[in-house]
Length: 244
Image (cartoon, rainbow, N blue to C red):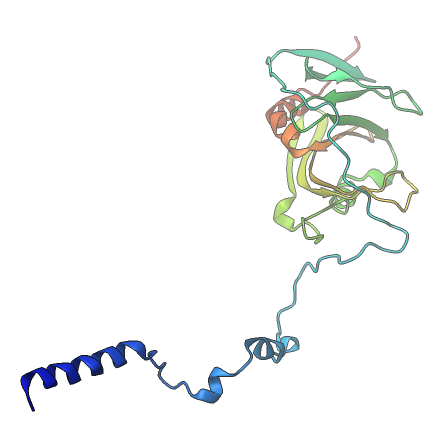
């Protein structure tokens, strides 16, 4: 065989080898035709032993139709001056930032309320006073926890609810902090619930003289984050106005 013929045969073999697709080890022609979707469908998902400790809520209870999330109310760039003013309720005195404007008085006893401005929209701080055992602090915190869910609709985990206890003279104060999707009833006896993602609650449960004063601020988390430290300062400023 001539040298030119040897070179031609070797070149032809090399080209043929390059044109062939490499074979995967252990792969047969039958395995190439297997439908991958059929393999997924054949997996027995019921065989899993995992159980979610906080199963998500897939649908609201009957009559509790989810509402459309509320739009932000008057979003604004809040500038914190650090200045405060004195407010009072009964014998309680406290200081609030001057940026917290007075809201409408709440019936039935004309309790004061405050509006907290911010980029996420306005938040509201409301005050409730009661001697009812239904407002026992731990029970109240459990009730608030039921008014928030995660983004998937699951209940808040234990570590998602922060409670700080402190004592200031005769006052026992619990500062509560939680966030998530706000799903509280739109009214005390209503079956309709809010559906506001990205909300946060900051509250100060204050016990004095057999009564519980609840200072609760709820609103967009973006706004609440701006006033987080100011709310702590407000809670620690709670004192009793002693009349001589």
